[in-house]
Amino acid sequence: MPVMPAFANQKIEFTDILYIPYYVGEQVKILRQRYFGNVVFIHIHKTGGRSIEKSLNLPFEHKTALEKISEIGQQRWDQVYKFTSVRNPWDKVISHFHYRVETNQTNLRTKPIKFKEWVKLTYENKDSFYYDIPKMFMPQLDWITDHEGKILVDFICRFENLNNDFSVVCEKLGKNVTLPHINSSKHGNYREYYDDDTIEIIAKSFSRDIEKFGYKF
Image 1 (cartoon, rainbow, N blue to C red):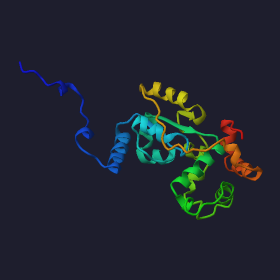
Image 2 (tube, rainbow, N blue to C red):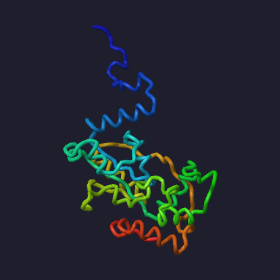
Image 3 (spheres, rainbow, N blue to C red):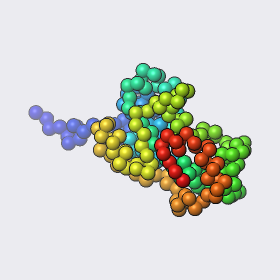
Image 4 (cartoon, rainbow, N blue to C red):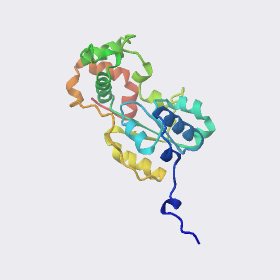
């Protein structure tokens, strides 16, 4: 009887033998999730989402729950495990600002402005240049609720307790993975960046999040 080589019993993925460009790989992940996956992650930016997507090999995307339902269909949505992560709005906003500076979005690195000015231009004045992608400035609840305000996901991780909350997700999915640290912006205590005016602007912009999740400045 012939002796089988050692690798014969190993599972070989298609991507192990063929280089796939990043954008194609992302499309493969989306198709796999649409038809075969058992989990959907609603990635609200600056809440640790990139690390979660990397750990679970999920597509990198910023889509609301309603957008995902439109994409995969209500029946599929009802079958899969849905979760998201949220963050203290004041902390999230300063992280969002620093990320935009680092990536030079709306010329924030080449033509810098102060954080407080940016908050007023975006969240208060809705300046068309800086307030360029409205979805990225909307309350976190808007990402995960329907038009009547019903929460559409099964579990909500807290950025402030992300490792522990993510372990709950992994246990539910039967996964044994840990979170890498990706896209982390380096800044000090978020409270140091605000004054009374900007504290109030963010409080008004994220009032529903603050009430629902109990966040405080």
